[in-house]
Structures are given as structure tokens and as C-alpha cells.
Image 1 (cartoon, each protein chain N blue to C red):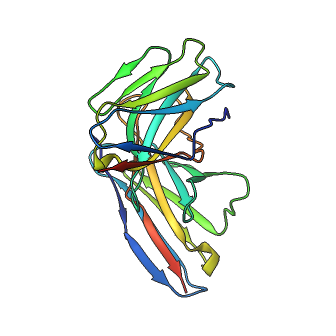
Image 2 (image 1 turned 180 degrees about the vertical axis):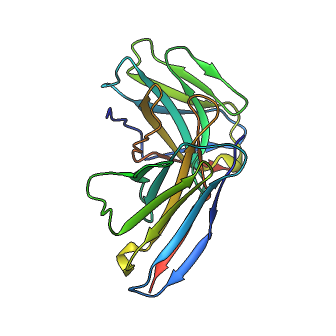
Length: 110
Length: 115
């Protein structure tokens, strides 16, 4: 399974954009890039996923590098409720067997 | 979005007893569900893949006789921790393949404490 590397923690001020990076240099052509987040004592929550093109939804945007060896999750305006651990996961198309890395703990400052 | 529930949300049991945790997909059918375990301050670790009507597939290092998984219907999977010990105390989370391609829905988790 391809691995992902994320910073252990990041901080952001409320109302400001946040860019959460993920490196996945061993990604294969069929791997989708998934992002989930986990609030304390809760199960992970789907954020966004993509394959090659940048993706937008109501929660966030996903920017994927042209060589697909890295991606960035963008929260356009961080709120206190966005404080969570964000996980970047690779999984081939049709596979839902997720291997979680260590994730990035995002702290949002009021 | 699709909803996955778990019951109970927390449980305390004595060492040597067995505990059953239920995972239900409330508004969709899930042929495949997954069970994870998470220790404090750590990431989720995949334990097994649960397939409706067939035997579960366990990850390396997970004892299949200790963690019994049954996927009896398209909306229910159960995890039974047999002969629980304090080291089995953890946060157990299930998930199910979503109806939308690429999405997986997670339950709220069950906190197990073995005394």
C-alpha cells in the first residue's frame, strides 16, 4: 500500500485559509487520494477525494500536483469546528480498505 | 449523507468476559464493512474486512479467534471481543462502503474499557 506523509500538526487563525499538505511519492496510477478528518472521540468524517484533477465541494478543495506525488487540502475559512486530525489516504479505485497514516492535527486559534 | 451507527457507544467489562459491538448502516445497504481499532493519541488501525454472507478477512497480527466478526445482513456487522483483557481497551470504529463511489462512512465509535 502506498504511504502518505503529513506534518504532525498545524495551526491556523480562525477565518483564515488553511493548506494541509500530503506527500505520496509512491502513488500508483489507480490510487485515489482521500481526505478524512476526525474530531475527538468520534469516527472519521469524509472530506473530499480526487484522482487527477482538482476538486471542490462544500467542505473544502483538493489541489493535486501534476505528477500526483503530493496534494493539498484547502479549507477556505477555518472555523473552530474545523479543529481535528486530518488524514490523507491513498486507495486504488474500487478499494475501500483504508490504511491510515498519522494525520495532521489542526489547531484553530480564535 | 449515509449514516452508520454503533452500539454501544461505550462499555465497561471485566477481564475474561466477552463484549459484542454492533455496526449498522441505517439508510443504505453495505456488502462490505470494516473494523478499526484506535488507541489514545494514535491513528486508526484496520483490523478486518467484513463481507456480508462470508468470512471476515483479518489483517496481519489480528487474532481471528479473539475478535469474532459476523456480517449477518446487508445492514449489520458485529464485532465480538472474546475473553477481553485490559490491553483490549480501545476505541473501536466501524465503517461501510458508501453509495457514492469513493466515499466510506464511519460509525461514531465504541469505547471499550476492560477492568
